[in-house]
Image 1 (tube, helix red, strand yellow):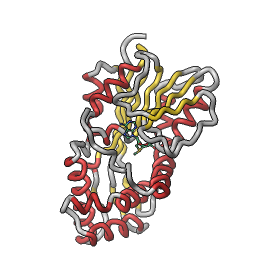
Image 2 (cartoon, protein in one colour):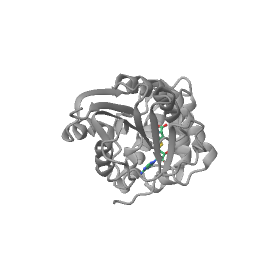
Image 3 (cartoon, protein in one colour):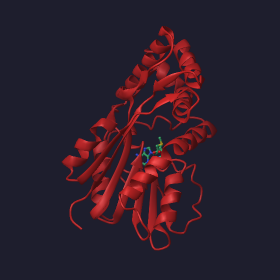
Image 4 (cartoon, protein in one colour):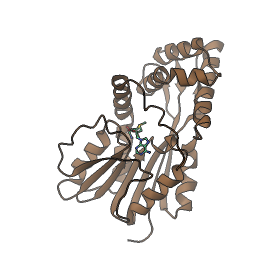
Length: 266
Ligand SMILES: C[S@@+](CC[C@H](N)C(=O)[O-])C[C@H]1O[C@@H](n2cnc3c(N)ncnc32)[C@H](O)[C@@H]1O
């Protein structure tokens, strides 16, 4: 198994929880719509991979209800505590090596998890194998190559470009692909998933909005890693954070590629 430490593994907990909660606030409505679109309903057995702060896991547990079940697997479930839902089971494990009975889930979901794995193919195979015939896989992963500043002076736009290059470089030195989202449709097609629905969600947003704030928090937390790429300097990071705070600035920070597909059979 290819080793690469999860980039947010050693960041400060309170700031990381704030970042994860902001991700949930911005992206949960679309994730819920996609999961319901895949058919999520009472009685389903679901696998949530990398639940982070846990809002999708908890909501899935409510929809699946007492006749269903949710298994939530996270490398480090430190933000989840004990689940108060008897049908939600939290498992501390690496998705690549976790042991599940094959063909046991109606639905498997992961958001912003595969992007952190050099051998995402191993995780993907594990997820597909764990689906029942006719079960649904819903994946949502970023494409940072979609990043683009729209307003701003030359210096600001240059800092935005450089921070994005640093993100690409930071991922690349760890064997990670900063535009992994773009590859999801082909990866799922090659595994025989059918009835693919593909969305490319690249919001154009103002500074101070949810996505801009997520990216500012990431930049603050990964500051040393971005600097270590040699692509950006401290002044670029400061300018990027000011831009991401400014309600008069406009940018596409990244795209989320969301793909739903059904395993054959069933
Ligand atoms: C960026 S967070 C996303 C959290 C959540 N899915 C969301 O979108 O709100 C990535 C999560 O995946 C978990 N994770 C990273 N690598 C993992 C692995 N190999 N197996 C299981 N979980 C992993 C992290 O601990 C973290 O909780």
